[in-house]
Length: 100
Image (cartoon, rainbow, N blue to C red; front, side):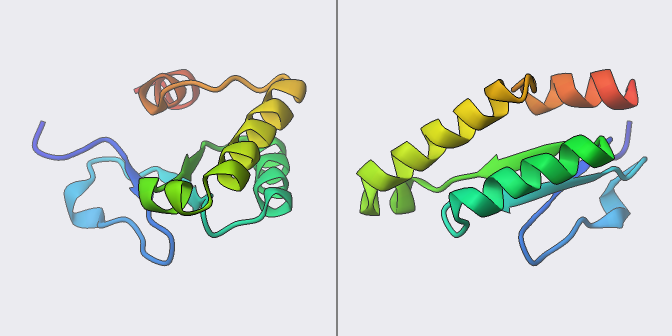
């Protein structure tokens, strides 16, 4: 294999198609900069469209407002679990959805 199977879209960026054998669009949302309402809305959208959604959080922002940010992550996880959506490593999600 000369290239990667997939890439994860960075916020405001994109995937570099030059290094992907079979580019899959996997979106990443930065949780630090998003409200809980925006994050749960993204979950609903991806359930409806059948894609893979990755949430990114940064240690610096988590520590800057630790109590509120940890609460947001816990609430997001609870929301996802209450919708009966599996939270899995990205490799497992890709294998189960795209069979690669």
